[in-house]
Length: 116
Length: 111
Image 1 (cartoon, rainbow over the protein chains, first blue to last red):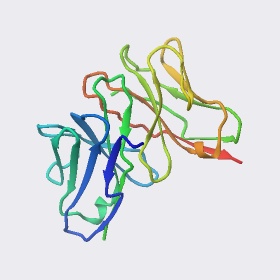
Image 2: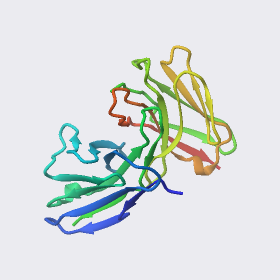
Image 3: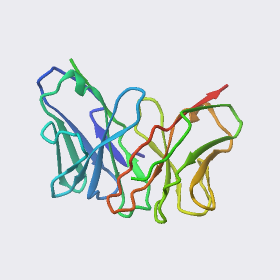
C-alpha cells in the first residue's frame, strides 16, 4: 500500500486564490519531507525541504512567501500556493524517507494544479 | 549535488532485456546510486539502489562499475508496464537526504 498520501490529486482554482496541498506519511514518522514541482515533459524540480517543527529550507529561486510550507507534525506537511496565477499551474509532488541517507524515498501520487 | 548523465530516450521490445546506462563521474565515496521511475501523471516510484556491489530485487538489477563512475539498470524482461521515465540519482550524502532529479531516460516498450 501507499506509504505517502498526497491530497488532492487534482485541483482547479481561480487566479488570486490560495490552494493547500497535503502530504501525509502513513508508515513512519517523517521529520523531513520534500516538495517538488514538475512541468509537462520536464523533470522534477526540488522546491523546498520541509522540516518538522522548524522553518522549511527553500531552493534557490523559489519564493517562500509564494509557496508556504508547514510541517507541524511528524506525519503531515502542507504546501500552500498563495495568490495562485496561471503560471503556477503544475504537477506538485511530495516525498519523504526514513532516517538515513541510504534508504529509499517514497513519493506521493502528485497534485495536478490548474489555475484559471 | 553530484550530477548524472543519462540518454534522453531508449526503446526496446516487450519481453526483451533492457539496459539503462547512467554516468556519474563525479560521484563521491559515500554517495548511493538510486534509481526511480515515473509513469505518466504519477509520482516517482523507487526501483533500486546500491553503493558498490551489484544489487538485485524483484523489479530490476543494478550493475555498478568498479570505479563507481557509471551504473546500469537492468530490466530482465520488459513489459509494456515498464514504459516510464527512469531517473538515476546520487543521494546527497551531506546530510540533507534530498534527491535532485536529472532529465532521466524515457523508455518506450514496443509490443
